[in-house]
Length: 162
Image (cartoon, rainbow, N blue to C red; front, top):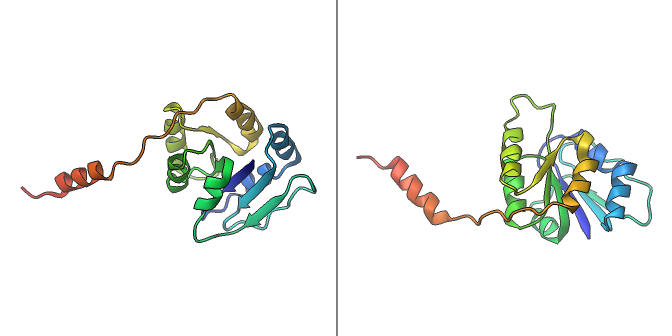
C-alpha cells in the first residue's frame, strides 16, 4: 500500500518536510502503508528518511501522475483544484494540505467545501499526523462523476446571443 504525495507545479516545502518526518513515516507504517512516492515540484530535493523497510521514491515532474494516483492507497496533496479533482475522480482517499503561506488562499475555500461535502479531509502541514489518523476512521463519500453534457448545455446557454 503506497502513499502518493503531490505538490503539483508549486513550491510547498512545508508539506514535503512534514511528510518525510520520522513521526509521519512511523504513522504511515503503523497504518500498514509500505512505501512513499513524492512529487516535489519546484522545491528542493527532499531529505528522505533513513529506512530500508519503508522505500521512498521522489521526482520533480512527470508528464502525467495518473498512474501514481491510481496505484496509491492514500493520496496527500496540495489544495490545487486540478490535483483535488483528479484524485477524487479516481476514487482515492485524499488528504489535502493547505499552504498557509499563500496570500488570498482560495485553495483553502475549495478544500473546506470538499471536506464539508464529505469527499476529503484537509489539514495544515503541522496537523498532518492527526489527519492520517483521522482518515483511517473516516468514511469519505464518493465524488460524483463529471457530466460533460450538462457543462456543454450550460456553456451554450451562457454564451448564446438572443
